[in-house]
Length: 150
Image (cartoon, rainbow, N blue to C red):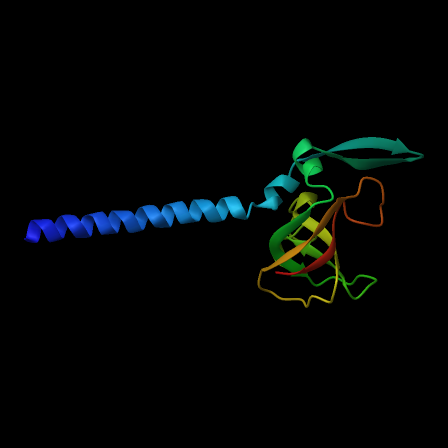
């Protein structure tokens, strides 16, 4: 009898572990990390007048999400911008971000939110329409329009 119960519990435990691992795999497939996709960029230096200017050259992966609604998990940065519903969103917290910590430009996104999203030192997930910016010096190279908290 003990052998039968032992075998039963071993199978149950194995089934639970298999279910957990399959569940994690499904979650990962349902919510891809677009931050990795945003890393598909290089830069080309051009001379404009007296100045050397670096322009982004977007790879195929990042071009494929241009115009699509995506979700990103990260940090609202406490920087002043011109509009109350605009802010910079970062993969990393303020102390490690592009502006202060030396992370790459691909780790920050300019956000135009539907409504004001308050600053928080904790990570949040936002969703919006992704847009590439190849030319404007006044904006970040990645922009998320119509964004809202998830």
